[in-house]
Length: 136
Image (cartoon, rainbow, N blue to C red; front, side):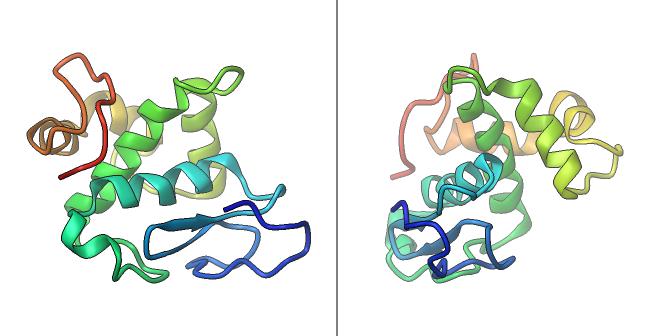
């Protein structure tokens, strides 16, 4: 749900202008960074359907879901004309996402096998990394 400029963002874990999540809704304003919007939307996609309606502000149940949301947001960035993977990874680094290999790009390319495997296992992406749909 896109909110008017200056409007409080409900469910924002990091505070405004970062996106918020409550139930099955992601809240953002025109000044919300796209990486934040895609990250919270990815949380809703990786969360089991039985838990989505109960999500409020802190969408991550575990490290695996957090990593899967990060991986998925990178894939979704490629679906947005004029944004793309390279921009997403750069924005993640600039914002302060932290990965043990030092950058979002290094994590995505060399250290995210578990997140990728779970997204495939959950039916969210195929073996080629194509996004398929929400987690059942």
